[in-house]
Length: 431
Image (cartoon, rainbow, N blue to C red; front, side, top):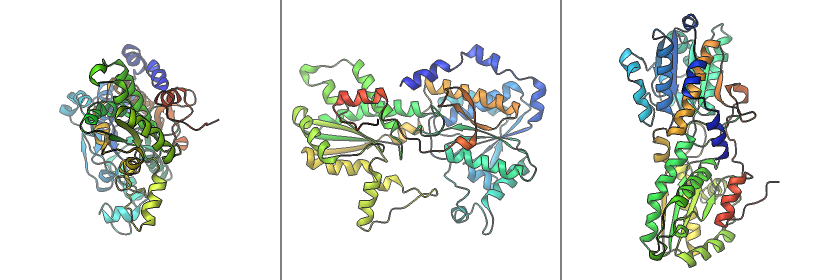
């Protein structure tokens, strides 16, 4: 949360932002066709970012044409796109009110030729990268805005490099979208804060199920394949809201019963026996236990266990095992049930609510600052991923060579260790 506050303080007031983002009309003549695509999983920033880009270009020069590709790289491969007309421009501000992507997402990996052929996005013998490049040239795209994770944005950068070798100039200006907040070298990815807030609000309802049965175990599974940031942020926001709530201890409405009793993330070793003993004591004392777990927590252990039993786990176009088949929440619930003596178990996933919600105020401000900078960068002839550099905290066009996924959550952070101390869960030293 300290990092969020630091970024929030860096966001420009509206009047300064407009002053800073002023572009001379003559500069706009260099860009006659701008492309926009969103790709990968959903996050609470896509609709806001698309609307923001349309609004900003229209403010600068309404004659700049904007082409949106439907369903990400799928639309780019098959030529499924539409031009943003005047009515869309006039009402683009309405996109701030919605989640999802107004132009559609898909998980298409251009390097996975076999998958692209299987989906009939390219013909046998065709190279998806060549097909995508040819489409960009045919459509006359000079600036491409990609809103997605590390793979979405670095894929676009490779397309620009491929075109440059053919003498075609393409600027790529990416916006970092991931609820996991695990993209190097970005301090805060768009939509992550909203996802954490929505996950916390989701559990405020689910926690009431603890009253449905004696000795109840509730497992809240949060998105996050390799990074536990979202799980931790969701727990922190939930506990912060809980501390502000009025309780009625005399009737059993206590903060202890509604609190988070355990947090399991991919970056931490999971000691089942030790946790079982600790949580059993809590169950015996208050009659229920609440666990927050990342969907990728203990995934290596779970996958190994399932494959040893002969199970064949399906993978997506990126080669990742599909986490709904790993089902970390159910696995932890099954293992903890006996250890803590739970009579009933409830596993609930907040992922779809968290990722599909409209952006909150913090993210809207972050998105607006990044979108404004992205359009400025387009007129300066720059390329890169737009975000706050985690090295110096400055908003800039980050070199794509520095961009990659899989950034782990820092388990040594002071706020995280304070929370774990408060809930009584041991954490291994990181120093």
